[in-house]
Length: 172
Image 1 (cartoon, rainbow, N blue to C red):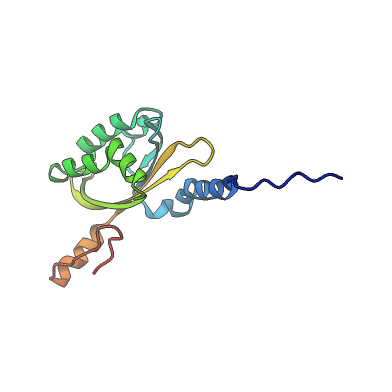
Image 2 (cartoon, rainbow, N blue to C red):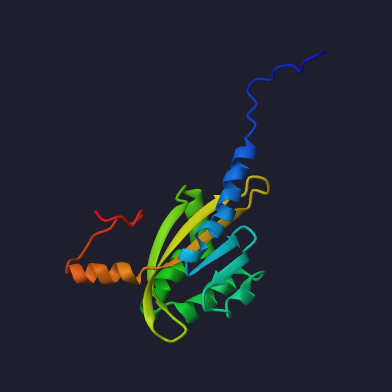
């Protein structure tokens, strides 16, 4: 039996490990779905919304299969309080997210005031994870939306102004 020659200096990426990590992120939503207000999966390379689900909002479900730019524009008008809309639109723009990925900044938290279907306002914490698909090389955005109103109420009840780390949102 002949064995293949040993080749040195060739780096072969471990696609299997990378694929498992990507699939874990894609399946993560099934684990935490009940504690979220919604989630979003976007192929940033193709500028395509692949999956969107936001509780009590059927209006945005029609954006699956459309462009992320269209989704951002509509979501900011429908969901985000006017004082936070510009900040969120800039931080969630496709160009900004791709630049973050290139810089290695793949995890982010964004907090903003949300407009609920009944017109009331609440605080939302959005967790962003940006990953490269190991086979296609496309860059994907995974967003998870969580109601953060109770946290803000506790901070107000404590009577102090709390500082948080911009990346981890942990109190400092």
